[in-house]
Image 1: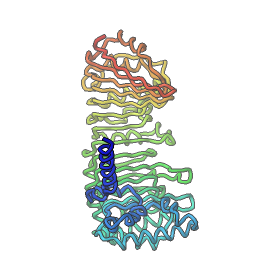
Image 2: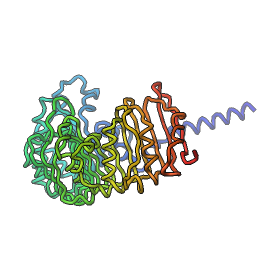
Image 3: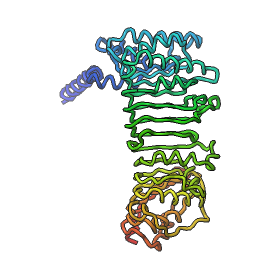
Image 4: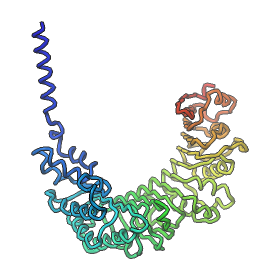
Length: 463
């Protein structure tokens, strides 16, 4: 019996050893290997050539490459070098990686760096053009003294756009972070007649000298414009006029100060996100904010900042056009009577609204009482209400009563509250409310200060 047990143990051990020796990673499909390697820095991708004969040439055909100078700087061979020596080695590695590649093209190129020589990068951009790159992400992690570096990049990129128009026309996705555009001619060369560009993202870019920003891309589907300061050293934002010639635009996202924008064809916009910084609080006395919202009145899904209900609570709320196509609305809110009255005015402008999501960042309302109102969306279309409260906001049961009394087709109310434990007994007071909808259900999720999570549901129609 001992011999039988020993034989079984040896057999099992041999199976485990054979399983460990088997190279499962190398046996994966090549497309899956490319996808895994796309998450690594290019320096680590090249190092995979030392794993074995099967890996020797895989790095040279990976279609997605990422060059991050911060990762390169922390490699063991370069820890003893000076900063500028590492920069020189980084760009040498960048250029040789392209020269030794076997694949005819790089579909996605990501470059994150601090500083480069403009003449040298002209050559590298020529390589990018020759490689027929379809997705380009460039992030300039500069300090206050490094702005000329990004000036050179924008000028170089516009030169490539001009002289290599055929190859540049294959670019489908472009993401530029902290790039300095100091001349309107540069943006005109770069963002005009972009034939196949589908995704454009501009984040933390310096455009304070531009009065007009023109974008012409007939196939552009998604545009993200993060017009914010990344740190205290880059306070100069774009305050001019944005002109969009994008007939097929579907998703539009803007975060920054109030600006003027124009759309040649806004009927294609399906989802729009607008976030306005409070550093331009004076715009509450101007019609610019109303014009920004009205220009996107065709969007079916709309996300607006908390400044909008405050703006609509004032006498000039009539400057905002109706939003007849909006089916889903996401709104920043504050628990005060003025903001809630502004919300009611906003609901008057969205007669076909079906889903309303509100994020309360702070506030505590005691001077506002629910009342009956005659609103088209609340009476005939509103089906779902989502209320999210932060740790700095105090939940208001009176606000929930407003929807229970007026929403006739309401099906669900979901409440989520951070660091404020909600007692189910408090909601029993809703039994006295004359429900407009007999099928409405209430779900509550609250988190206490200690992190304990509590969830419960109520079918108010059964009260």
